[in-house]
Each structure stands twice: as C-alpha cells, then as structure tokens.
Image (tube, rainbow, N blue to C red; front, side, top):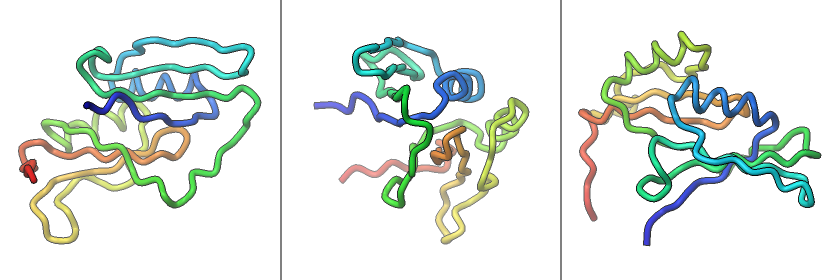
Length: 135
C-alpha cells in the first residue's frame, strides 16, 4: 500500500496551477474536464504518479468559494535549504506566512510555512535538520 495523492478544492484552477508549477516547481502531470459533473481535475507533483505522491487540484465550476474549516493542517515538502527556498518563492510572488527558522517549541527542525492562493498551508522542512524516525 502507498499514498497516491492529496486532493484540494480550488476556486481558480489557473491561478492554483500557476502557484504549484511556477512558484513551487511542480509539473502538471494530467488534467481533465468532466462537463457532465461540471468539474476539472488537475494533478501536479515533483515526479510521475507511478513513483511519487501528488496533489489533485479539483475545480468545481459552480462553486465560487470554500470554507477551509479548522480540521485541515498542511502539506509538508522537504527542501535542502529552507531559507533559499523561501527567498525564491517570495521572488516569484509566493506568500510566506511563517518565516524560515528553527521550531519555536525548541526542536531542531528548521521550517517555514507558505500559503497557496486558496489559503492552504504548505510547510517547508529543511531536510538536513530533520531526522525521520521509524516507528
């Protein structure tokens, strides 16, 4: 068993695709309109779906806005240099909502948070500072 994708509902598909591809550097893997259901699915990721977990962006044509609710947390992306990555993202118009730096709770993990055009949070974690424990 493996994780395939995470789905996010988006208001403006073109704006979201621009953020995930141009700002974060993902690739648009596939996109399909479903006229009978009045929605479009677009899959983006850092590699092919056969080898990578991806993000499914769902645009429901007749839904102008969504309430994100308080149950959603964030998507986490590992990066080599969180400071340089945030600078590059900001230079491309991305919104950093928590500046890069060590965890404020005293941990050694270096991280930052971004916000996509719909307000979804994306955590950037510096890989060198993170030890992935196995349980």
